[in-house]
Image (cartoon, rainbow, N blue to C red; front, side, top):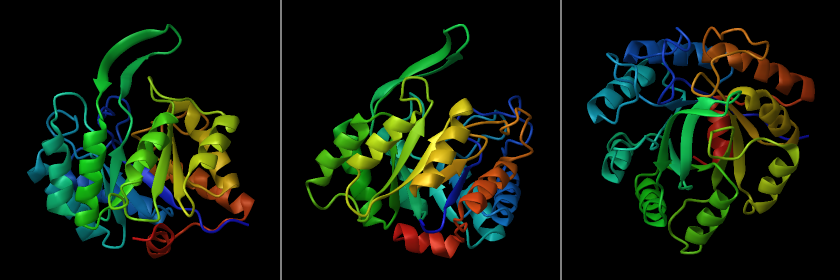
Length: 285
């Protein structure tokens, strides 16, 4: 049987708003309270996109990010914080990596796919918003080196299979990424891959030895991806960034409520849920 299951909660995301779900945190205090509730439900990592409280949109402002992280650390000193480096168009590479170097969280996302990205009406096939998400090799290497220098564990975000190839290419330099590596398979983003069990197994087969992985399923892909990862020895991310609803279609009361059904999956399959300190050992933090 596989070891303990790490549950990550992505609390807000760049675009999720209170219009989508009133439980979406905006202020540092709301982030801290939601983090605390998640911790009580077995979450050991919170993934953070700090918000501009006046607009509800993600911000790259270091001051606001620091205030948000400080509030979480004050309320939940044991939680692992995973800070985003992913922002929409208009945010420079310098602005994306600056919070990581100043705040030095234990983990940070590292995006390795350049791709079309959008939000749309899937039933009608109609785009509502789109941009080109740019993550060139030079940024992958630069961000990886910065994270290693500041002892920040990269969570390598895989939006399509080419992302693994991109990462392994840069890895050949030997001094960019800390080992063992940790990946996240992102399913369901418009412009990226969708979840299938065969694709999941193929992605697992491309990972380097001793690597760990988690899954992030957007919207209807969330539950199926979580099932597969629990069974296959991976880990699971939930949260309002990815899906504002519960498996039965009702609005989630918060990211913390989504953690409850992941705990049920782990219990049924016989995997214990990792504490923050156990997660640190699994990930080599």
